Amino acid sequence: MRSTASRTPRLAAALGAALLLAASAAAAHDFTLGALKLDHPWARASAGPAGNGAAFLVIENSGEADRLVATAGDVAARVELHTHTMAGDVMQMRQVEAVEIPAHGSAALQPGGLHIMLIGLKQPLREGERFPLTLTFDKAGEITVEFAIEGVGSMGGQGMGTGGMGQGGMHHGTMHHGTTPPSN
Ligand SMILES: [Cu+2]
Image (cartoon, rainbow, N blue to C red; front, side, top):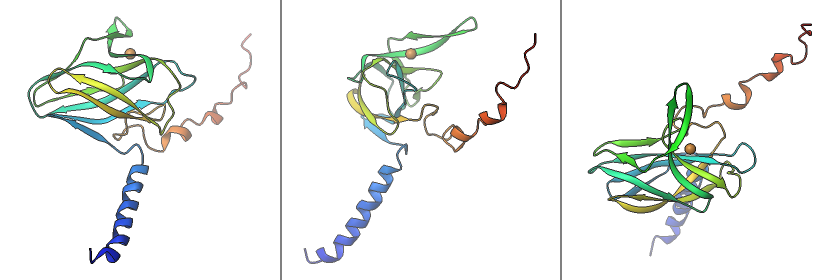
């Protein structure tokens, strides 16, 4: 107890740093369940009113093979495991029973592939907020993790699509809408 006085400022500084880290937001967060590491669970913000949404994460497995068999949460009327498949030229989504997580491997739920489908969101997903989903694995059991809501165009904060190009990159102003002469 004798060094309390000298410790307090350092503790405060450490807390401040921790808060800053937490505030830098989309920064990766992860959860551990047995041999599984659930890396950076996230979802895209809703572009408009609540409708459907999709949630993503990467599951790394340092043990024997496992399967993600169920997802649940209050955020939407239904929470399903989906994948994208090509039917001819058309990309379609369909429900899958489980996501296989190979032994000493990983499974990625990411835009364009496997995802957790949020059907009938109770309210729009807002960037910067979080919501919980419960994931159930065959062997590792069940865990509830927080999904971070990122920008509408985000690819998951792992390098792509998170730079400064989002808003300013389109230059709509240079398209001169309405100046094309009628062709007839
Ligand atoms: Cu889907």
